[in-house]
Every structure is written in C-alpha cells, then in structure tokens.
Image (tube, rainbow over all chains, first blue to last red; front, side, top):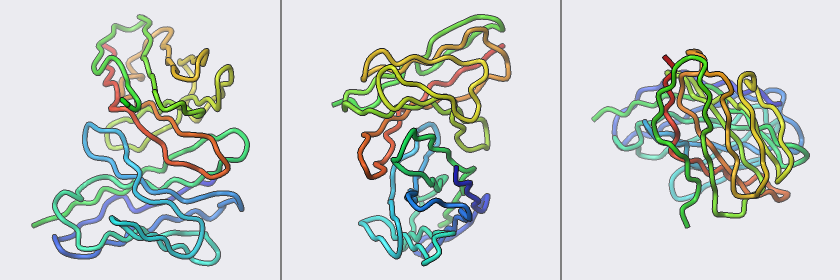
Length: 111
Length: 114
C-alpha cells in the first residue's frame, strides 16, 4: 500500500490560493491519486482525482509531477467554507482494494 | 437515491456488550468498507469487501467482524465492546471498474463505550 504524508495543518486567508502537498514515495504504477474534503460531523467528500500531469475541475486543480512521488492539491481563492480537513488517498482498482487514508491536512481559512 | 445510509447515528455501549452497526447503499456498488476515525486523527480502514461473499481485513480489524451477504448491505459487528472502540465509524462504497472511482461515505455512527 502506498503510504501518504501530508502537513498536519495549514492556515490561509479568504481569497488566497492554497496548495496542499502529499508525498507518496512508493506509489505503484496502477495507483491513482484522489483527494477528499471532510467537514466536522460528516463523511469525506470527493474533490478530485488524477493519474499524472494536471487535472482541473470546478473546485480544484491537482498537479502531479512526472515521477508521481508527490501531488499538490490547489484550491483557488479560498473562502471560509473551505475550512476543512483534506485527505490524500493513493490506490488502484486492481485486485482487492484496501484504500487507506493518511492523517489529513486541517486547513483553517481566516477572514 | 439515498446513497450510503448508516444506522444508528449515535450509540452508547457498556464494556462487553455487542452490537451491529448497519450500512446500506442503493447504488449497486461492488466495493464497501468500514473506517474508524478517532479525535484529531485520520480514517483507519477496519474491513472491506469487493463484492458479495468477499471480505478482507484492513489496517485495524481486531475486535470487529463483517459479512457481505448482499451487494447492498455491509454490517460491522462489535463482539465485545471495549472503551478503545469509542470512535466515529464511517461506511463507504464505490463502484468497481478499471478506474478507481470515488468513495461515497455515509454520515457516520458515533459510538461511545463506557
């Protein structure tokens, strides 16, 4: 299983761009990188997924370098409602899927 | 379409009691899993299933049993509750294809063992 490492916490202000990096040195060839967001008293919610290079959707971008040993979640112009815990998950669909989350990054957005 | 439904939302047990946490999904997902989340910590995988009749252990399986008799249901059983099992439990599911699809989570069961 690919182990992930993220910063424990980050602080930002409204309107700023936030970049959260996840390290996954032993990522396997078939593994995808997925990011989730979790608010208090709720289950995690899917944000974005990628395999290599860059992926963008309506809420975030995901940057993955060529060696795929890390990835960066980019949140443009954060608001107070982006205050949450963000998890990086690395895994694949091949064989039995034991999808293990890291400890997550707690993002606090200040006014 | 309710998604992933967990019951109960809250539960208090005494040490040694047994109970079953229910999880049901109506999306015909093949993959289902149970996580526990302790205060200030991430999600740790307890058990998972890639289809009816197939289950496997995750990172922290001790003290928990699961079964998968149908595609829809994946109950988690605590045979003899211990205070160390006080936690929030999340059930998740996803469809099984060649591409890793997002996990859909329930809203959790908050369990306290006294």
